[in-house]
Length: 593
Ligand code: ARG
Image (cartoon, rainbow, N blue to C red; front, side, top):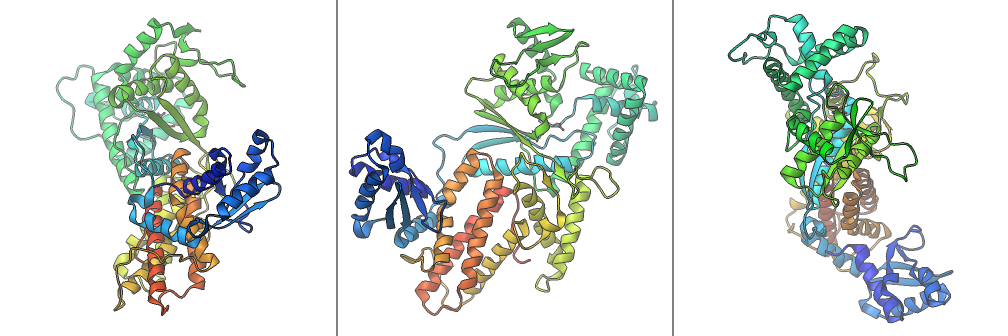
């Protein structure tokens, strides 16, 4: 259905046209002075030059048309104010009709795209053999939310985890395993026949081995060289190393799946850098043959600088001087793979913003070398750092890297303590409820910040039931659920599907209704800007509007049945929109909390 602002702008546009002006001048926005009006149109200011008239004169003419339309008008008031603004308030009858249409429509009237966009969404990006840490939280949480938002808006999204499974870290782990268990068949070049089913290590082994090997390689040049050599041999397809690599992947992926499940984050594809290994040689040859890739100090590069660059963008390195592929190479080959398999309209990457230069180079190289169609959009959403209370990157109390798993279990446990204090929650539901609220605390705490900004991870604040937090949103929803349940248990309860004509009786009720009416357009812009934080802001505002209305209204005690039923409908709509909203953010609401 038409969004509220489109509907209002259409009406204003008609009035401009009736007064002899361009209808496009009728574009109306939400007022930035809610004390003066609900909506405002600055079209008369914009038209003044074109029509050689004082803006106030135009505004007065348009207001006269609008004020002349009588009973049927969607406006309760239209005012021309100096120097030439038009200030509006909408009529309560129009507003309740608008909300009734919203209540009846699929997804509360959100407009479906004429043709869904096919989007490949690249998020998560964990590295095999390295434990997930708090830095991986954002890619997973933001990515999951963007996937849900895009799907909710009718787009065709394929989520790919794009694991780091092919780089030096694999060579490091392999090297260290060889030092510790040299007799394993994987390292015996003369070994024939199959390799063992069981991995010769556990996840905890891997978690200890990687940092150990990484540290040692920084101090010991021979060790580093060996790790490089093993990486190279793996990438060249050494059967033993490849079999060992598969074991590392198997053990590591099982662990990742468990972690992402705890976060309610899912992927359609579990591809990684290694997936495209076979694509690289052909791609590189073509880049050379087409004249895009050339040699520079031994390496193979594609120039990506552009004249308009404010700062220097270095060439994109495709192969190092020893012929090894890099992060850019696998990313370019992944583009080739995705184009072949899915022909996407858009590829979106969600990573730390420190990778911005990398993606600028990759995107430019991909366009230059014709790996994507000119109209295919490539977008990088770079997120900021998760900081501790001291404003420095978040660490454990001991100063180490905080593992994601530890972080999640800490927040789950603290929430459980809180939930246990509520006698209404039966003992067997406490854990489930606490996990649900903790997830909201964690995800909302992250998503309510604009992705590109750093934020401070403040567990106490995130877990609070008051303020701009996930638990506050859930608390409001639980409150609405409880009123609806009580209503449903009343003898005269009916299934109510519409509001009362002209319902907006108090200013607070009207505010709530106006916020509900803006849902479609908010959701549309949340998708266009891929901005979960804007959805958080909307949801938070809606909860505040609801709670203000709730505190001044005795809903269940109301004697006038029509009024009471209309409020019940309003509550259902509020709850429905909040439910869809938090689904898009990636969490859900318990029955009680
Ligand atoms: N594994 C990478 C990292 O830890 C993130 C991968 C992001 N996706 C991509 N296509 N480059 O930084």
